Image 1 (cartoon, rainbow, N blue to C red):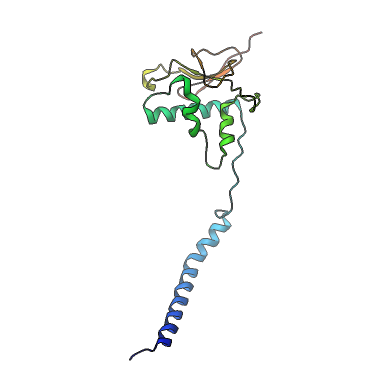
Image 2 (cartoon, rainbow, N blue to C red):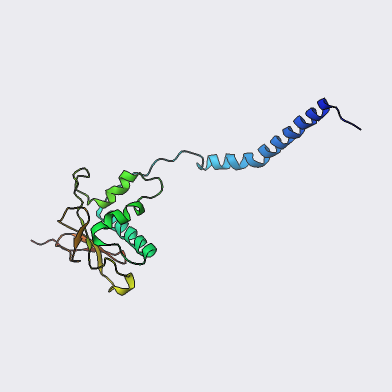
Amino acid sequence: MKLSGRKWWRYGIIGLTILVAGLVIWVGPVLISAKRAGLLDATEAEKYQPSREANLKAIATALNLVHDSDGVYPVAGKWMESIGNRLQRNGMTAADAQLKLIRPGLDPKSGKYGYAYNQKVAGKYRDDLPKGTLLVVESRNLARNAASEGEIEAGLWAVTIEGTLVKTAKQN
């Protein structure tokens, strides 16, 4: 039996209709469930709330990520640049990620930072350093890429290579 052009077209439409109906029956419930679970909703950018703890932990994590990829900690003169792209999490703006490099209480627009990198860890392999070695300290040196000798001033905080926060008592 030979089919005319009109019949082929009609059978094609019927076949396409069946295919679309099948896809709707198969995929429809999945899409409805995803919508109900909020998976298809637009996500808002995460608003970062700076704190001493969060900033120091984020900086230590970023420095350890650099260490893990390069095999050593970064050089002291460019440590902030080396971790910049490792501070941003999913949904976070680049501007919010940069707030992690500014000690809370300092104006983000002032060009002041308030963290110093222990230059004794620069270029070193983590396992060659003693446990508890300070990685970054809060500092009265407010310059970008500030470096220290790994000593913490009274009343300020630091983070070790293991990510442990260290707090000192304020002097009277």
